[in-house]
Length: 100
Image (tube, rainbow, N blue to C red; front, side, top):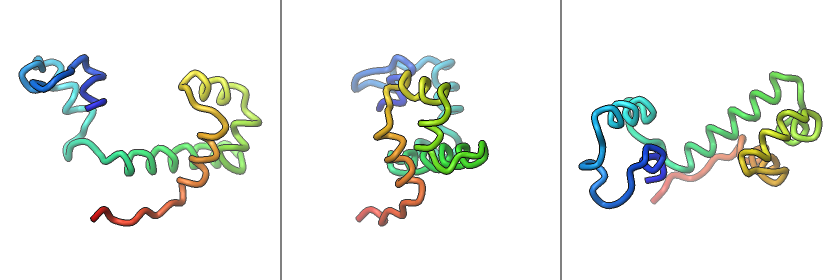
């Protein structure tokens, strides 16, 4: 639902409100298999942030937060903070059980 809200689409009749241009943009952002689950998206983002921190020579995301002023500023602009960086460090290696 939030993904559709990014395109200015709200309410029950979502498909009726989509223009052709919006539908193409939505398909492009969702990919061939549709939207990923929230859990999968969180894990992927955490792993990406961790890999990026390691590639730049930091010990982990929290180390990058403390050492890289630009990263710290961007993190705050996104409404995130140190607690989120710590969460990402832990989540990057999480193995969640399959849903029932």
